[in-house]
Length: 146
View 1: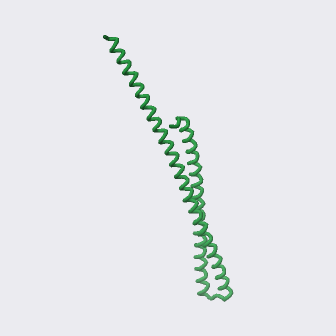
View 2: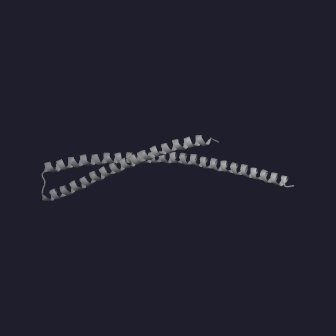
C-alpha cells in the first residue's frame, strides 16, 4: 500500500485534475448555451422576417422583392443549419468534458477511499498496540502483587 504522504500527493493531484476538468466542463456548457441562444435568435429573426413577408405579400409585392425575400430566406436557413451544427458540436464537447470530469472525480474518490482505509488500518494497529501494552502492564501488576 502507498504511504500516507504518497496518497496525499495523489489526492492533491487528482483534486487539481478534477478542478481543471470542472472548469473546462463549465466553459463547454457555457459555450453550448451561448450557441443555443444564437440559434434561437436566428430562428426568431427568421420567424419575424417570414411574418413581415406575409404582411407584405398581402399588401402586394413586386416579383423582384419576392426574389430578394427568397434569396434572403435561403441565406438565413443556411445560417440556421450551420448554427445547428455548431450547437451539436458544442453539446458533444460538453458531454466529452462531463465524461472527463466524472472520470477524474472517480479517481479522486478512489484515492480518498484508499487514504481512509489506510487511516482505519493505522488506527486498528494503534489500538492493538495499546491493548497489548495494557495487557502486559496488567500482567506485570498481577505478577508483582503475588
